[in-house]
Length: 559
Image 1 (cartoon, rainbow, N blue to C red):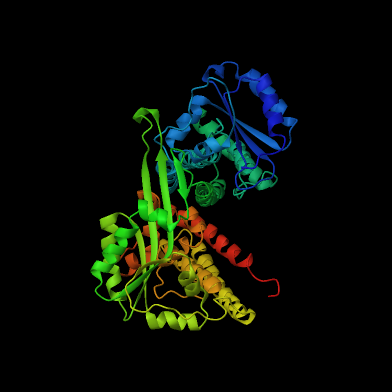
Image 2 (image 1 turned 90 degrees about the horizontal axis):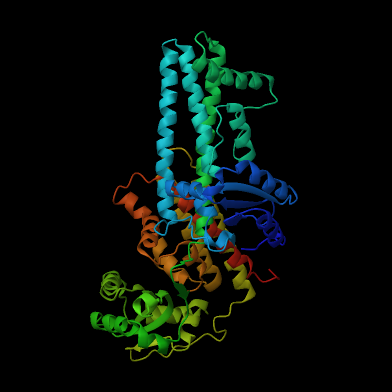
């Protein structure tokens, strides 16, 4: 995180005049002001609330680039346990800019990660939504019976509960008032996604806001309250508009938290994570690479030659005095191998690949080409095959009598004319990808959520094909998303950051997305949760942005 230049100064001023336990800095996606300070104080300071809050607010006024939000420690942890994503995201260790010495309070429980917190958030949304709907149904019930005064109270409660929930969603606390006008002004202040159901400068809306004040007070404390049906119908329209906007605000908030979490999803605080390119000789001593080759050569009777196309190694390593500093951890190996044979053996690879993965606990991608097919690619000066076959120590096994390749005189280096053709093809792929993604993004609040995710799947396939074709003039013979993903992961790192596959949960999320087409067409999948679709949407948006950069940054200036 890039901190504002004056952050140390404002922290120094705040802690010198006030007893503060924690200060977190929220800059969200932006890196410009106003910055948000989340200030946590001890529960013991409840009694002198009126003393220290004005002091801090006065201090903050001297720093117009900052806004401050105050919470007691017990409030923070309660909200996080309830699934408040704002508080959970704000109180991440990476946002911490100040911690009082000897403070042992920990805001986020150790067993609570983003996925669990998000699940709690969705459950809370469902509960609050049910309360709102019950009052809403009560409104229509009593309105139909002509009991307009009781109906108006039900309407007021439906509106008030909606505002309160949105305030908690966005800033982890609501304003303790029954005034709809105050709730309206507060929501307008804290989120730009609020469409301002009421306009406090419009004469008619001023009357409606006053009517809501009268409804709550009069139905609770007066016996002769009456309300005009025309006013009630206008308030009904406002209620419906608010509920539509509330769904939009919720969806946008969840997307925002998803996006913020994705940008940090590769960080694992319990251990050290690495993804490295290793020397082949070192790999052979410590990985199942030799065993993989042995499995392949024993299962395929045809003479074959095996090349290493790419590899990834990920691990979590934990060292602790609790086990006498014995190193424990998890290791994931990913290999991409090229098999060259006299005749086609592609029909054997699917079963063989699954067998090896299950037997050795590795991730494996096998590619198969005949010798004639490879020679044709070399004669055409194909960069992809020149890179693989020319790489030092890429040859793992030589089982064919002759594999002395005739490399092109240009050694895979493309001419300017060829690059121009590939660039035109790239723009076509990019347009296709944008079309699919924007089409999926446009599907909201409908039953077509499956189509939304299918379109995202197609968008990524187009982008990945475009990358391989532009950089290496290579179009794979398999074009499902899982296959393309594993190909590019051995070339670039960004796919693993956005769609990590390190643990079981990561793999489940990734597999659900890559297999969506198969599950729809063959397994008759007909529904997927909206929160999952929004999760995929943000991942895809980040993914496509990285793809565009990879090409734009390498286009020759002459072109």
